[in-house]
Image (cartoon, rainbow, N blue to C red; front, top):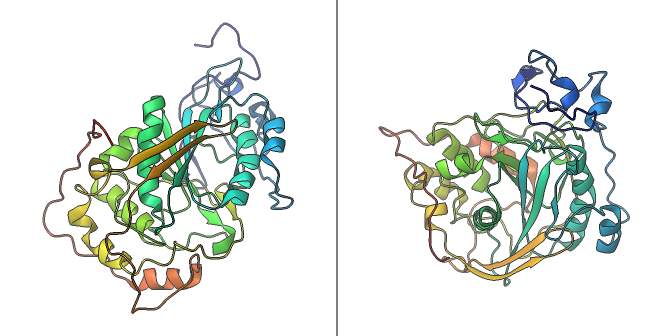
Length: 362
């Protein structure tokens, strides 16, 4: 039934739509669309204005705004980068988790675009920036595990969005909500890949999972130090945990990557294929249930919650690769190498996932 105070800007929690372009994925209706449970939503719906969405967005990288300018532009964002619609129930409570180190310009661009993007979608949300302390080899996957654990200490979030700092969404029909049926990969069409999916199992850039889904596959692996491989590992975990990946239509899942050079300390991981081969046997032991780190600081900034953690160092130490070397982000070369790799054979029954989050100290 409709709530008594029915209005155009209400964002009452709703059911799930059918499909767009033969791809099934979740969409939550605006209140004005809830009169009939059979109504399906389309990005070309004539009533779309009632959703406060604009569709395709023009994304610019210049000039890079200051933090003060972003704060002024978002007066209703509370400390810690938290926001909640003022006059209605939010569509979803979504935590945005961004692994980060030495990408301040990229972070400002992301915050500048993402805050109004999420507010138009009538979400209750919080943005968490997870900073890796020190100058050792970068570990994106482990930082995401840290971010999930710290975010869930704050609130029982409906949805976890794992978001690279250099990817800006280009269409606000791409709703930042989760699908209860399975994980979503939403960065379907990035400009660096010619706005197409690089290979079928690709799960990189921006993805969305409920907390239960994240724990069901034991989170991300902790052993991927350097660039490459962790997203393909998580795609394998989704399958092993008995779930399926869904995606929005290519026309909706558009992202533009901020141009940058390769990061020092995030060189290509020469061990990534060896790790991927072991995923089938290691995924229940390497992840949220084996996560260790030291929380160094937790600061509620005006635009995001900044978490700095010591996640240790690569146990392999300095390393060199005897194989082909591609600069970080070399999409075509990495794509071809991935396509030439055959997935490991599946020996016998699958292991059972550990669904329980670890307790106690870090």
